[in-house]
Length: 303
Figure 1 (cartoon, rainbow, N blue to C red):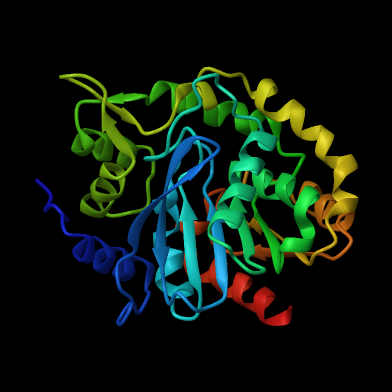
Figure 2: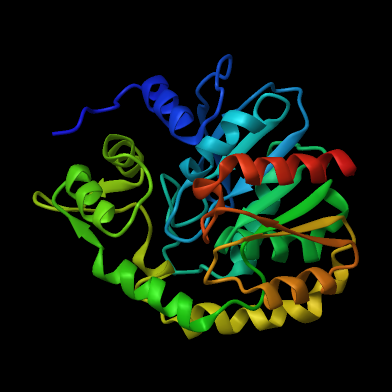
């Protein structure tokens, strides 16, 4: 039986130890809410309120907590705002099932405007990177820079299809502890107690006997890979409108974002740069948060 990591500070200390991060002096995030377009959104706020802002967008099926390890580092000199996007985490779902990248981009616009953020750095991973890119094609002048993590308009279809089949097969659990046991057998890299604490933030009780993920199944498991990926091809013709500096990041071990696709994406951006983060698969922010933050901070310092 594994020990529970209930208090936020205990969870963050364990997360920092696992990632090799010195988190001394970094306070747990404040949980905040904002209304955008009639929907309630939750976000986590880290760091000094007067520091340069970074808006962080998670991937599909994830939540704002996917950025916790990164924020333990970024929040030393930045105001980090990690948003639960529509249909995810503790934000409202779309009653009409509107989960296209332009739907998300409008939420990002409302978030940045609602908080009156001046020239934020916009960072998105996977689905969040596509949503950030879509926002930047309409509002590049509002951004200090754009960072897209392990995603572009083109990704490896077969790898995404395999990932979605896996999500469908692991949709319900008896408890967060059961989820931790089952996902550990799939190769999750976090220690069991830390994995359980992480999963508890991303699972909700579905009924008396089962837990499930905190995302609307219409965003992922009730759609095909083609339904998710094909619309992204329309972004290629919009990339010329991204006039702000842009950083494309690829996990060195990613099966989803191939080197050729990453290079094509970076080259299509007027001010694009490509960086590969070692020892990282698709979820670069959890596999190598120190490497990802180093790339983000170097990019930010160059602006």
